[in-house]
Image (cartoon, rainbow over all chains, first blue to last red; front, side):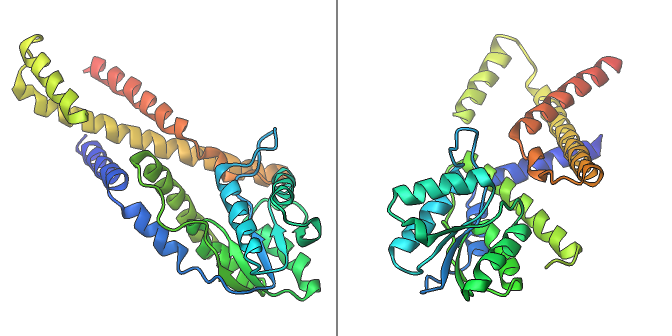
Length: 196
Length: 93
């Protein structure tokens, strides 16, 4: 049972480091990279978590769309592309309209459930319009993979992460660490199957 | 908070319950085993969940998100599994 003890000790140490040190925040900021808020052809807000049955967006989805709307308000691009599931894009469109974005400036494509599907759908949507420079709105941890997939789809990507420093309380840091682990697994999977 | 309640628990255990301070070390070791066992159950649960989703995806042709296994209750359930297994093993000794 020595191996179980060692595993328990290792788990406890990882827990303490993740919850009580800013390690997860540092990784979060590193993955976000430097925002490049330059004038672009479109603001692309990727989906995240969808919306519940009442049409209420998840925390992350809401943060993303609010960042996108704020970039639109700063006239950094004339078009706001809202991606994700149907429920998510519907809820986001209502919110964007409510916050003053004209309907003519909002673009939504077919529902997309993965980042790869979103990249393909956004390419289908923007390519005929000749819009290739995009401000990409995503969470810091999702930015490397999302940015790489968008570049593969032929876009010039200007990253606009929703935040960079991350949470400051232990519980939220643990949640961030879990998301980081998932994202790193997703990155590894994409590398393994040769998509990235 | 945790340090304070641990100190109170130590005081009560040694005074009221007359527990041996020397046995605290072996109790901590056993707790580490229990925590390690929880991690084993968690990894097993995640592996089973992901395999199930990927299998269902392949069989049905429909997209099922791996995010379904991303739920904190799985950690709690794994801990409960570990407690039951640990107690069971202790009784068998």
